[in-house]
Length: 266
Length: 160
Image 1 (cartoon, helix red, strand yellow):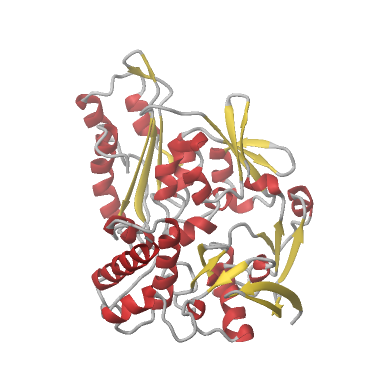
Image 2 (tube, each protein chain N blue to C red; image 1 turned 135 degrees about the vertical axis):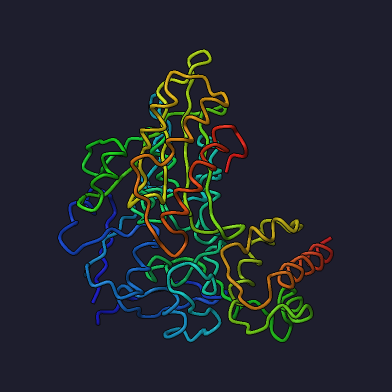
């Protein structure tokens, strides 16, 4: 039997997190587990806290409540750079339910938004007030008990940020892989580049081989070719029903090349 | 199993039921309320046949914790028709042979209803996007898209 406890604030909900307890956000992950008889938890906790659904500016960052849905992201002019990513996730019903907080914990092959946020160097604010880099959270997300309260992201404009989702089913399908790139430039040179892959491992990951290849260079065809050459260096992508590891390795350089050359935003 | 009281508006009618703790909205609609129009398909958000409207927006009822609709408006295919008169979407689906096995139809209709309420004159691309979370394994989608466009024409023409 599964019990459900609802709290007015995210802080109260956070204090109620114990063993065999899961936090319910939009439901697209947890209710699926319930439907399939997952016995690893027996208690669900949720919060009605309005701050979880808010998008607000805070100094030079935008703070996105963990309960903000993909539809809210698409509708918000403050984070328009994330709209193409949110639009690539599911159909309208999923986008009305799935939250940014849930996407950080979405198992392979899901987590396209988390991939984009990883490239954007997001920070995660936990309900207990602590703060951590998204990369840290993704590296140990299976052992984190606390609730994510919000995600902080710097404002972006122009074409510094790019995202591409690769799926076999059109117009919407689960990712064979997703690629996000943050390509800030100093003059003509790339500086502090961040590249992230989704669906190429158990969780979204940075691709340091590509980042190192791009760093300090101009984004020309020679640089892009060099980056494509190391697109899967050191990676061990999974086999699944959507694609084999071999296929993922084969297509990753192709899609990375297209993304870096600006061939479509998705 | 513990049950919780739950009140919501179901197809325009105030409804009060007791729902099992942790149950999803689809189970409550089908087993408690007795509305069999939304269907159980995949149970994981892939097929879309359980799509209902909550406050006018499409949601997957199989992934919606029932108690989260407390005080909200839930619409299903069962509430589309007005007495003996079918909704224009239902008529267009019938006239366009847009259902073969029919299992996806309830979800398609609700996804289409949400689209037309926001966008009375959708393009073909708008329709394809609106039903992109709904799977049909029979029709190849074209008759469904055609029917939604036909219904949009009838509704917007009627309004004009």
